[in-house]
View: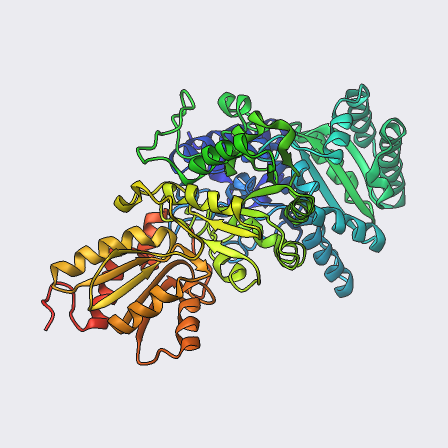
Length: 633
């Protein structure tokens, strides 16, 4: 029997469905999401929680004319299925498949590309003012989670929207969670709203009044306005709702899984000509018990077994994240100055154990990376050793604070930068492609990149003892231990490591690219090409003596990094050679090209972008003039 979801080719097809059919459709969408994500991995809990809300939005609004803008976008799986991508949904997050986040180049229904938090209201306000300037009549809706609403940009946008007064709808999708439990004063305020004893009464009153709205014209508008303000006042009088003080008409909280009620409220909201916030309460992981019970694990999950919710085990060794977590706890046991800071990601960054062992020295500041960095600067200026654990792509949001508040004052803040380089299926919004480029030119900052977990621990030891700022960037996942790393107790800042010696060509690699470079050396040796391999370890300061020495010796260099080819490690090496006057050197750079890397498995992407041993060997062989498989002349 044909399922309802198979008949939905665009949102217009929803408008002919009955209430019972919409409920059935929600069930089918959830079943599909669970089935696909169990194979591909992805953001399961957030997408399951937003299914009913998504159906209601598309049943009321007319996408793509009306613009629905998703914050972060990891809850948009139902949106993708309802906008013509159901047949391709099985390719979710796979190379050349559909993206796990909204992308403007993927569908006209993806009004705005997303992936980072707290951007939707700013973008929606831009769409709303563009509409006003053109004199058109499309509706603009931003969907934002309670965690993302705590981000500074979201509050800045609300402040501006309230001032401008343009017609705009913000749907607050409140599930009490971002990746981890939400923190802060705004989260506490939302918690009070959820707990209101009037919750059911308010919702029932809203439903009753909306059902009896007169049709058309000013009467409808006045009645809708009356109910919205009436509901707001019932709640506002009890809790002092801050949203109205920012210029928004507030409605809620309402049941985010009651499709009919949401549709009725949205139809009433369409009659308003001002900023409106609709507060809906949803359950993260709705419809899959394992995700409802453990939404943190199933926020972003690898493939799993549907029947028991068990994640596929990994056969790899210790991850960099886990090694960082263990090392930081060990160091904090000995040094009471060490404090840990995260921006709403204690699990992903490895700070959960630290938070349990040292609760008074752990700070989750919410989705607020700029604040996290300046907060760390204040702690550092007061004699502490703050460790800011953050993903590479999210640290981009705090660039000015790194420059102005930390490095300009030469404060001893330690940045432990996870997910550096390619991260895989999450794609271009999450790849850590630029951190070497945006960090290495900042004065006073040491920039390190370990090749394995032993080296990571040694670099963390150095960072704690250093009197200025240090950034340590490392990739997602694990890496084999280098044979030479049984004892690296003598490591100092700026010290590289010669892993293989040779005169024909030198491969200078950093971080995750050290291991494939060593393998490339072995491939080259099979063709009689003898390559030196240097583990640079530090991008700033570089080991000038070692690099200049090998450049003069080999005269041919291959520079390898898992970072943008512009402005990163390779650029630093070439600047060094130019500065000291080394000429006549043949150089090849291997890194991420001047484009945004696509999504797919990390192994697939590294081969695509030439970050594998075979390509490194081929480039080195071409430089020497001995194609792989042929002996050197």
